[in-house]
Amino acid sequence: MTQRITKLADLRNILQGHRQKNQKIGLIPTMGYLHEGHLSLVQAAQKTCDVTLATVFVNPTQFGPNEDLAAYPREEEEDRQKLASIGTTYLFTPGVEEIYPDGFATTVRVEGLTEMLCGTARPGHFDGVALVVSKLLNIAQADQAFFGEKDYQQLLVIKQLAKDLNVSTEIIGVPIKRADDGLALSSRNKYLSDQERAIAPQLHATLQALCATLKSGEPAQSACAHAVQSLLQAGFGAVDYLEYRDATNLQQLHAYNHTRGRLFVAARLGRARLIDNIEVA
Ligand code: AMP
Image 1: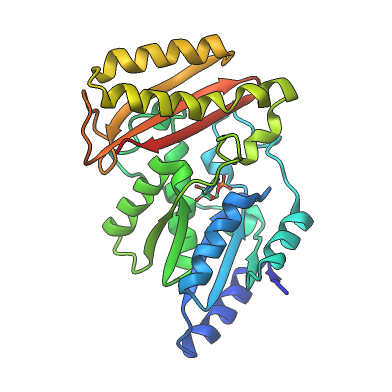
Image 2: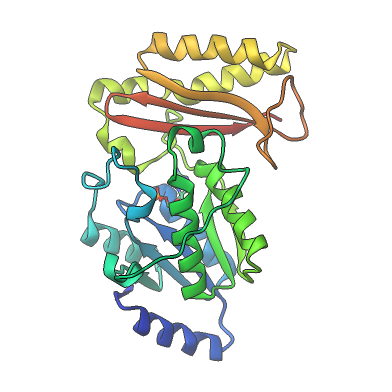
């Protein structure tokens, strides 16, 4: 059984009890509408932690004014059942007023890493992420916290803030979980029509083909430009970015660099904005 907790004070008391017993706590922050990708984070936590704490909170501060906050898919009971089916210990589902009480006035900003890729297309997004993750890390005081490589830039931002703010929780990245056809699982895949869902795997396929092109020696700029054209031809509405960057600091790479390279893409398909990334090794 997964125990659901909604109040901060209750969560603190319960976690304190586990800490007194020297039990290792693993934190898994999510925005809900859970799929196998989220569950893989819990399963990673179960390998090293005694207690798993998944949180479901659709964080308003990370959505821009024209983004999908109100429409973001929510399925509380299904989420609880999925978490219970794999033996998650706790589910924390705070209300917005619990996390952002009246008079809340603090911001958290990670410079540098947030000023590119998704940071360009979604101004303020990573400030909201950094804020809520800082709060959840503080609240849980977990031994480890688990984040998906699906949101690779977010993972680096969180590692940076944890380091800069002397957070003692270890930040762990978990590989991307994909559908059989290669599409990275995402709550936003729900927005795709059947026709768009058939096009969507081209995102991953294009990254794989681009990876091979880079390895054959073509400069990154022209290889990426060709790949953008093929995405547009496949039916994507717009490509926010498609770039070859250093996996540790997100600096642009100009040609195949087998020790540190990663490809990053964000593209619009119908109502959805899909992101993906792969290692170029
Ligand atoms: P979200 O609910 O979209 O905010 O995601 C919550 C966490 O799950 C984040 O750390 C994501 O990176 C991670 N996640 C989402 N989709 C996947 C996936 N397909 N594979 C692995 N992790 C994922």
